[in-house]
Length: 240
Image (cartoon, rainbow, N blue to C red):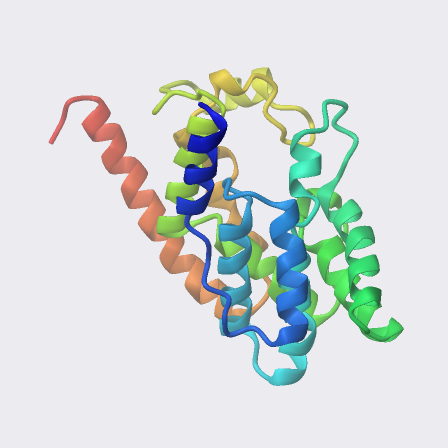
């Protein structure tokens, strides 16, 4: 694809509407857009997590920490995805990057530490559990965006990005032993498929939610996904 067509593609790319953000948060959002594209973990995901965190929060005090945390939570994601060594954890690096950005935008030290804790603990694999209410809400918002209708759509975006097949009918336990690391990372992505992602990871997400609101939403989204993948299996098998 030539440079002109790449420019047209970028201009036509869907961007979440974040015009309601205050000027202070708009500056943070602009920095986030410089770091992320519109991949499955890109700016579209960030926009949805921001909106979900607002839904889950109870008051403005929580939102005052949650807004910058939600905007910045995946800022290092593409750095992790492009890292061939597997050493980068986007939650840890993202917390470091966020600190610099927050200082530049006049946040005080106490609030920066609260925001960094949210970012550092939003990822289940990082091994750090959220301790504050804001951190639990961000973790829940991030997890909820991986399930339901959006979760299904994202799983197929990822499948396309990594050249996975539409559906793979295999023994899930044997597959996990053969193609997952101890940390749950997929070894050979071409052997993976959206239904396997659901069986091995997505269906377990509802058990990792902290807040009551998120648990209610997670239950509904989980049931929808279960129904979808059952139907997908029937259709793959040529049944009604």
